[in-house]
Length: 307
Ligand SMILES: Nc1nc2c(ncn2[C@@H]2O[C@H](COP(=O)(O)OP(=O)(O)O)[C@@H](O)[C@H]2O)c(=O)[nH]1
Ligand SMILES: [Mg+2]
Image (cartoon, rainbow, N blue to C red; front, top):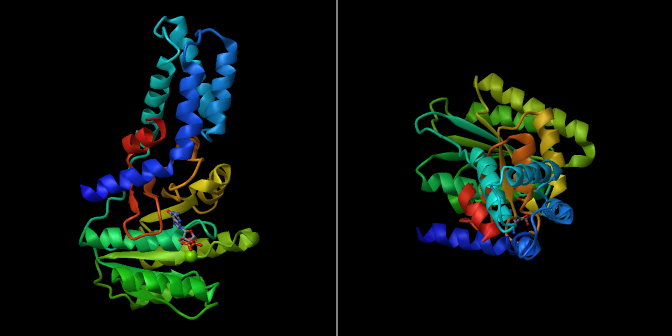
């Protein structure tokens, strides 16, 4: 419980800027306003878009408000905030689907995302989280582009007491994965997390490389990878959405990890990603420490940006 409170506090303080651009402005916008003021709707739309929730979400909310006014279900502008909360809850609760990893069966997680989004750090934190939950974890260093990337994963492996399988820099990533899966005892029944490269200036090559890794995994173990997690940096706002679209189309993504929610004004992007891409948010990251990753909980998140 202590840990959880601590995490919520970090989430809430991290999202202060998001909350300020949204909740405070919303309160002052709505206070004492007449409901049928077209300027109110324009401002509301602007505000939701400025909070990175996206035009689709904004229009849907405003349509809902207008509909409720027509049906006389809405008497006071301040109630719009409740409607916003309800809509967010509907959308985000659908995205609250944590990984369901059974013990006693191998489970492969392939982690993808652009450079700097937080993949390696997320893998370290996730390995810790899963170890605490009683899972065995092995890490595979398939970002072979920079020596530092391999070392960074090894350091995390030492911290969380998870073996790291690696080869030398510039080794073919798919071959690293192939060899690693060969090395891992066929009776291994734990989690295998695969770190990958994310240099986007060679987009076509990167996508081909990731597809090849995915194929290698599937050939070794039918049905694997059980999870392809896309790591997105929440501070990049709309760019995160663009990346999510691209990775989803190119390789198929089964879940999202949203990092760097500590200290962003763009937390509303979560709503947009879920609304427009219908992908589950597996975990959220609120810092660089071991404990700074938790499963996504929609009520906590909504409370952190609205209350
Ligand atoms: N504040 C904060 N920093 C993070 C978080 N996740 C990762 N980072 C930092 O972001 C930078 C890039 O992370 P890294 O894991 O190397 O990204 P990768 O290139 O995708 O593997 C590092 O400095 C991390 O410490 C997070 O949730 N919060
Ligand atoms: Mg990395």
